[in-house]
Length: 140
Image 1 (cartoon, rainbow, N blue to C red):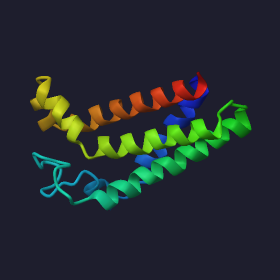
Image 2 (cartoon, rainbow, N blue to C red):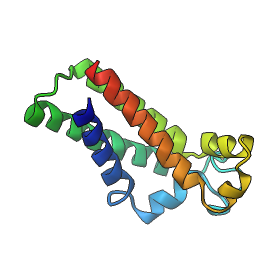
Image 3 (tube, rainbow, N blue to C red):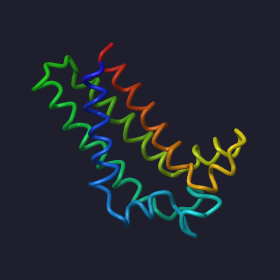
Image 4 (cartoon, rainbow, N blue to C red):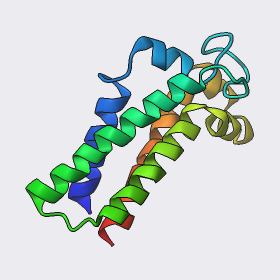
């Protein structure tokens, strides 16, 4: 399980940082007023950028799973991989719209953390939980 998780995490880092353009990063959450928009994700803007970014995650994670099967001998079925990739893509898209992240921070007494850039940290923690769930399901 650890090998698959590390592969998925490396794929995540690649897709979230070197493979994400400034334009995608700036639009994927649906901000109309920039990162300080008090209601990210509630606007129709940015869905195209969001889906391109989530698709990049699916592609790179798919390559990582293929490496796991070929190079590491991971026992991952095609159906399991397809479900895991759908899970990763769908949740990545939702998390990056920032609605669940801002909701969490606003309802757990962390509004100051949100105001000072904390959403990015909670975003990454949510992505890690998704990847851990996928790796666990794939290797169970």
